Length: 271
Image (cartoon, rainbow, N blue to C red; front, top):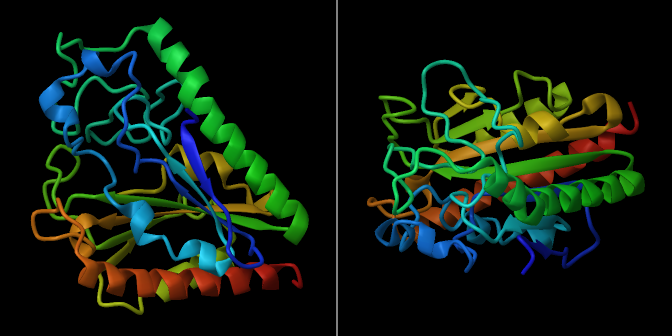
């Protein structure tokens, strides 16, 4: 089984790719019995239903790449050498984590780390295929349009005390401190996301993960932005079930914002 799914545009494509690296929930059969069975029944660090929330994207001409396997198998938004993304005391789970965000052991044997040999195996089977395929799609779209935007999609519980004691804002746009995308694209995204009834912060407390920082290369006309959102804005109060009413409102804002970004991208060619 491939570690990703590709959903192709239903209409002529636009220069945007949507990546959803943390929506996967499957565990490979050869390692599933190594994990704590109670935890993997509902892997809580999953970005639940984000692929469903963005299911409008193909109708805009956007190609989507989404993860199949759980981030507990391998985290597609971490550096392949597990280099930390932040150094401010927050919990940083590894490329192949051994605990949840709350510090709970993921494995039956309560191992504190995954072996180097096993990490290398998972990188070859799950990490690199996702990233190679995503870069191929980006290059193809960039060749067609002259520029491309990677919109990397995430969600998180309102409160994760090992990362931040206070509630997270509703929406957090990450641009690697402005380095991963053209200023005009960042301004378009901020303006669009600000039109809704949601609190919005830029690069605080998330600047974008490995995907945003790696694939955002504005000088090469390849841009990347990350959008983190709290799950309560499209799920129920328990942050366990999809809430169609809340999701509809959020999807409408995302639709408008991403449509505006597509127009902005095309206008960049004329500068």
